[in-house]
Image (cartoon, rainbow, N blue to C red):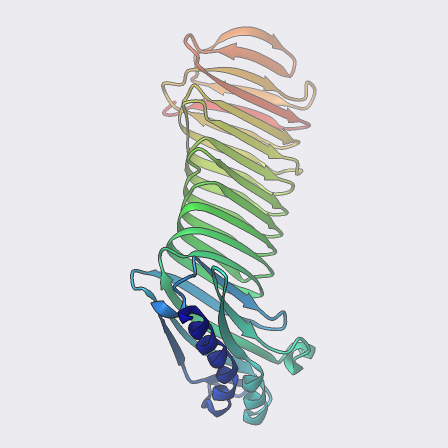
Length: 361
């Protein structure tokens, strides 16, 4: 009976929120720029006690700024205001009334929705817009799920997991995810830091960068079309980086105890640079097309090398790595250090140069 009462209270609040927005104060920022006064919603634990996930949804016609921060408190606090670009204060007021925040608890999810009409008046003009800026504090034990378009998104954990989707976002920033992260976002710069657990990042038309990734026993996979992939700091069972047209830059990469890294770049003039921090009993595979590959290996490297390139237009250069050559032909070298427990395979086609250098040489 208590749960039904809670749901009834939430439904009443859901209906009441839009009505409260009519009396919002609007401030003029410049000639055509307006903002509403800041609003706050505070929800106590009993209003979302069944939730294990925080879900954010937005109408396609609405843009904005969304910051989600973890909190040790057992409450959800939502701080927001509306940003309006209009021809007059009256028009700004009408835009503000079209935008609302509503929330509900459904099964195990707390759902926050930013709503506006699909055919809102501002959507028909490049000089008009209705946006919502939200700063949301949620308990650190809730996972995240959201899909937005045209937002600036900043998530600061720790949070257990996050599943994010979107398109044409100004930027997607995520830090401190503990058990896994998934992002599928086109035309959106993706910036990550301190990501643990299985990771799948799919981008298109913008760069992906990450620092301090640890996939644990899972796979950290980064896929990008028409954009660069940059990772500084990786540990874990498997790393996959696939780019169709953009450089790949990997630094401080540790491959230990049977780990594997798979790197593929099919773009023209899309170079690959890899700085291996440490490698032991592991495998690194790199495939490239008509572009350079530079690999920096540790001083105590212990590996077998199989390097293939175009016999006419390709080039292979090895600096400071003492190798025992098993086979060497135009465009191919098979060699290994005296003791070797790892394998490095490099395969590039076209006019690309492969350079392998020992650190400090």
